[in-house]
Length: 170
Image (cartoon, rainbow, N blue to C red):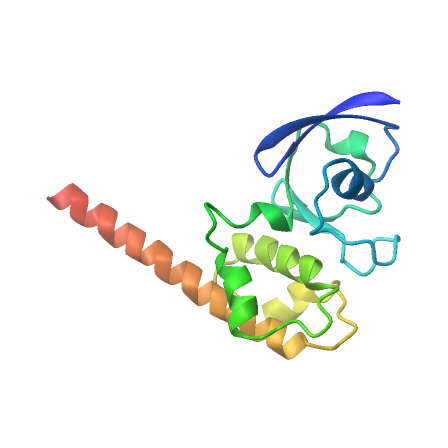
């Protein structure tokens, strides 16, 4: 056992665990975060996805010792001050979930995609999301939600830029 320091969703935590423990187990069992899910345990389905250093990472195969000190974002960390992230809202608006099991992985993978490419094409969305599986086959709704969130995020950025520009002029 070892004390491992983590920064999850902007908060610092120290856990006493075996350094080889999968990050997923620490997030769910020690930090009581329910967003990341255990799916395959092999890093293939994506249900356990979190974001580390801007990358969508499979937490079920990532030893906790390898992420010490890195900022980790889970699904719970996307909403700010009670306001859903545009992806979370788009998921609701587009009625994406069927069973809902994969939604953590889908949303977190989509977040990493939109952070890198705020206006992806349909082909880029399909490519970026290809490794995150949905057993209910809601891929078209997922794609629609990502496009809606991209529009919302782009509009918000444009409004912020316009406001900052008018403040400089005033």
